[in-house]
Image 1 (spheres, helix red, strand yellow):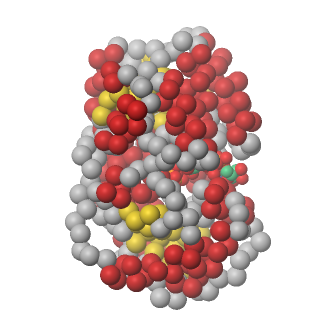
Image 2: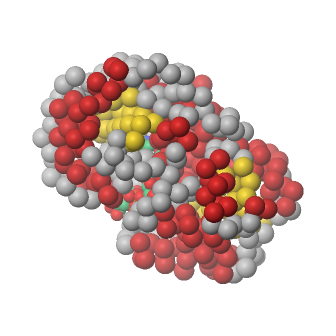
Image 3: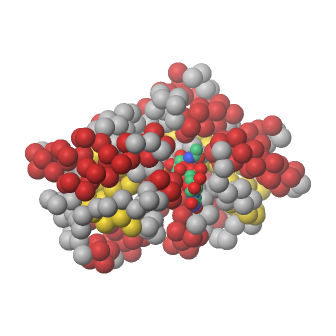
Amino acid sequence: MRIVHVLGTRPNFVKMAPLIAALRARMPECEQVIVHTGQHYDRMMSQIFFEELGVPEPDHMLEVGSGSHAQQTARVMERLEPLLDDPRPDLVVVPGDVNSTLAAALTAVKMGIPVAHLESGLRSFDRTMPEEINRILTDAVSDQLYVHSEEALNNLSIEGISPEKVHMVGNTMIDSLVALEDRFRALEACSNHDLRPGGYLLVTLHRPALVDGPLLFEAVAALDRIAAELPVIFPVHPRTRARLATEVAVGSGLHLVDPIGYLEFLSLEADAGAVLTDSGGIQEETTYLGVPCFTLRDNTERPVTVEQGTNVLLGLDPARIDQIPKMLADRPDRDATPPPLWDGKASQRIADHIADLG
Ligand code: UD1
Ligand code: UDP
């Protein structure tokens, strides 16, 4: 079998690394080809994940870089098509919901090549999010849909996707976390930032609805206020950094830092008193780790993290950040249990399934 994996962004690398390793172990004779679209390209958004997760060097770099949605999607399609032409793969695997995901899925399906989608079936029901469009369209053209939670099964069924294509396998992003747990637990990265375990808020914000407009400055001002009581460390995504280019004045309790490598970030996440985010993956990781998570969005495509995990939807309302210290203090002690099949073995289940296809 020849399998082409198409990856482009920080969360893609985390989701795909364990599957590439599991396929290598399960099907050593299978040829795996890794295509990096180049949607993310800074070292700390890309290369460091390959190193820390032990992903082989990509076989092809498409170097599409940044651009509008149409530009980014079109560049991936144009540059990927000839790579899929000769020799043709038996399967193209795409993860998540970014522009590279949709572009690769569309390219493959139009060439008659089967597509497998990892993290299928998530829906925010908010079509103003580019990711929602990417998810719906990718699922519509995929042949194998790998799912990590019950609500995803339901979403796909409502959209009329045949149940034979849909497989509940678990969460490969959690596989990566579990695989590195001994290493990141030993790091105690918070001490490098003069923070103590349990005594700080870890923040990430990068959704356009929040960071591309004035809400970002309201959020930073609110974080600055609560930082006097609860120190804040905020590794700033490049999209967000571009908006904060004119340095905002902040007090000494708010640490704005560059994006952080995966191991160090997981260490900061595991030891945080709480996390404030609009990231999809971080809602899942905090649920697994049992760390309180506050999501600064009106909706989530991952309701299981609210129902079974540690996630609280704050709404797209920076004023609510001021309430975080009190919400933390009032929070009932609750043992969050990870959702079923978030057990570190999802990739093995997918590899077994793909082996049966071959
Ligand atoms: C993308 C995904 C989003 C995902 C996020 C993960 C889409 C539509 N969005 O958002 O779903 O949650 O990745 O982090 O696919 N930039 C750099 N260096 C980089 C990468 C980006 O400076 O290595 C800057 C550029 O100014 C660029 C901006 O960040 O224009 C946005 O990058 P882009 O990949 O378009 O979207 P993200 O916001 O990263
Ligand atoms: N992450 C990281 N360093 C950071 C911020 C995030 O390693 O500074 C990791 C995080 O642990 C998770 C993934 O990046 O595995 C989430 O990526 P992101 O929030 O960019 O994307 P999303 O999940 O929202 O699509």
